[in-house]
Structure formats: structure tokens, C-alpha cells
Image (cartoon, rainbow, N blue to C red; front, side, top):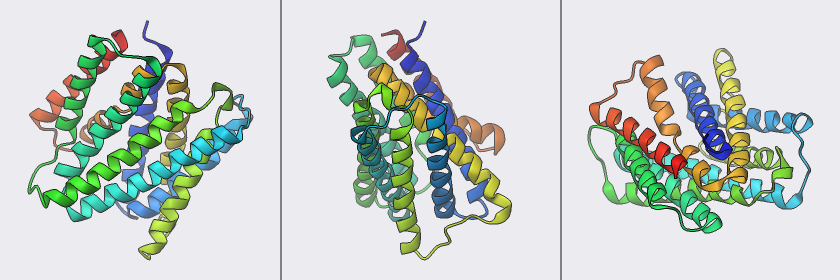
Length: 277
């Protein structure tokens, strides 16, 4: 039977995919920044509400760890969007996806010890699969800005995910609440600096709310996953690009190229190897 951490990590990826799906529905009309602010705010409130349901002992250390993770997520979003504006998704997305796996896996290896050969091979296959999944088409764009901003985004997200491994199991929902609160504040600052609206249009708010609910679930399940078993959870919890591509194909009719299909297969194979290892 797969370890609980790996299963919770996979559930977190599904929740992230759901959050992106609902966020995409709303941002098609409203714009990315307003949806980001609204969804992070809802996620913070949902996480706070779960404190009354899930056993959660408040600890200032764990709360600050969650806040630090939120800084990573908030700046990761800024750097990711900045890279897209200055370069191309063909550079920024694959680089960010790789670092979001490599950094947490590397950190988890420090906690769990040297991984087995099967785990190393599994991580390599998963990383390759993510590169194929996220690699875009069309003009590559300016390479140097894409490398710089993509690296910054991947490092920010990767560190934001890795630090959550330091939380204690008794903290429950508090780290996720802090994470989403800080990420929301960073998103608000970015939105105001660009003189954009903070709230989605009325007809699209339900999608933003659902995006936030899924986001809260993603944070909670990832935190519980890495607390249980950091290494496999770090891999399965970073597989959400595969979920996003699958939902995009089924719901939005996005084109899925052969290379992306191969990427999905490699990603699933890699995850299986990590769990088995």
C-alpha cells in the first residue's frame, strides 16, 4: 500500500489542479490578479475555519513557517508572471516546474537520508515528464530574462514548499492559514501596484471562491503529506501540472501534443517509482 504521505501529496496535486481550473474559469473574464487576490483570501478564511474541525494546536513557530511559505508563494507568482511578460512560457514554465520538484525533493532527502536508486530514477522521470508537459509552442522569446525570472519563480515556490516540512503535525491548519494570508497580502500589493481591480466581476466570483476552497484543501493536504513522509510527498505534491493539462484537455478542449502525452506517462511512471522506492 502506498505511504499516506504519497497519497496526500497526490490529493494535494488534484486540489491544485482544481484550483487552477476554477481560477481559469474566472480569470477568462476578470483577469489573473483579481482572481489571485480573491482566491487567496477565500483560501485563508477556509483554512482558518478548518481550525475548528481539524485538531490544530497553535504554535507561533509553525505559524511563522507557514507565513514564510506564503512569502515564497507570493513572490513565486510575481516572478512567474514577470517572466511570462518578459520572455515566454516555453522557458519559464519548464524551468519553474523542474525547480519546484528538485528543491523540495532535495530538502526531503536531507531529512529522510539518501534516497534509493529507484527513487532517484523516479524523480528524474517525473522531472522530464513535467518539462514535456509544460513546454509551450511558438516563439521561444528572449532567453536570458526567461532564465532569470523562471529560476527566481521556481526557487521561490520550491523554498515555499520545502519549509513546510519543518511544521509539526499538531499544528493542523494554522500553517496553511498563515501561508494563504501572506500570499493574499503579496497579491494585493502586486495588484495595487499595477492599478488593477481587487475583486472579480460578480458573475465570476463563484469560480474564484471555488478556486480558493480548492487552494485551502491543497495547502492542508500538502502540509499533512510532508509531515507524514517528506520525500514521496514532495514528488506527488508537485505533479499538479499534469492535472492541469488533463483538465484543460477535457474541459477547455486544449490541444495536447504527443510530447505532452508522453510527459504524462513519464510523470505517472516516475511517481510510481518514487512511491515504490
